[in-house]
Image 1 (cartoon, rainbow, N blue to C red):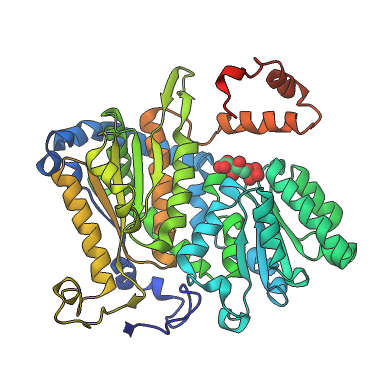
Image 2: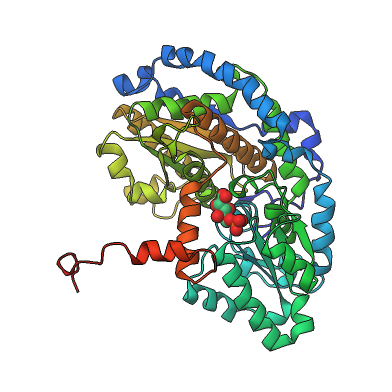
Length: 496
Ligand code: PA5
């Protein structure tokens, strides 16, 4: 087994290399994410593919979207695009993290959707797979990270059950400060800690991340004296991973925040060209849009790295909530959006792939490929007289995983199934910062092509409001009535 670092090095994002490696242009260039869309084109997938002229025909619209995007950014409505430059935020994040790091063994994020998925994705991508299970010393005295993202009582109970509450801190994250799931998680945890530790001590275990001025959580932070961080008001939940929302949990587990933001800045610089063939975000958005027009309504994101599973979940939410819209910007009925689906290579080759290869021609597959893993695991050559095993000896698991990905991409193309590959030279904070930024911009460019607003989520709000009504929140009585007055369930459609 060859390994570039200690096998159990934690976290992956920091350690043996200089923190400022991203200042070296040569190193940064070597870490650039690349996009290979050969397998989207007719030369490789036949008439299911795109011709070069399809992209060329769209080029004027992309070029026109370029100044519009720049203007929206200047006006602040795409504030997420400037987050990588707001490095001053790191000081406030560290100020909150520092005292917690002195005593905290477990750090629990109480949040949901855009207030949870980014933190989980960063943790999964940039910390050791066994990070949470390591003893403290091996985690360099940093806490384990738990991201609930649900109110499943058994899951919540089970997670709390395993924690030493005297050593547990809770980060309550809600931009609106009104999300029922998050507030219920908070109430439960706060009451539990008050009972176990007493009211005064319990207060020290909570940190709030919310709007700087408005909402229940902001009020609560002031009233209870919780330390707090602010979510920039113009950055929506699913675009907030590079704000205090994602950065505090990331800081707690030792992720290199400077490198993360540097990666996002690096990508931003690459996205300055109005020409799609020099701009990976425009090119990717164009491909997604053109295939949606060809009724490829399912967008599969398939990382060939377990560590990127959380990134795929994060992207699915970003894409679905931003683009799934009933109305276009002029208020016309449109029904935009394609359905994002996460698959993981090589695992889903043995689960989903049959469908992708031979099922309906309604999918576009995006592979996330990793050039170089942290570890190189050689496959031993143990049974020379058994051909079915012997051929693997002398290769590595790395080679096998890459061969699986290349073979899948090739065979899909051979079967006329379009696919493309985003290649990360390595998984590190710099490439993850690039990937986050790239996919966020892809999403807003796709929204611009579709003519929808990527920043609202009226469908989600509707569900939240009905749930408030059902839970008896004052002001939402009509929502409860609306449900109660709906048609009663019919016996003939029930099987029990
Ligand atoms: O992206 C979004 O806006 C949503 O997914 C929100 O993040 C989610 O609904 C949670 O909202 P809040 O952070 O206000 O609790």
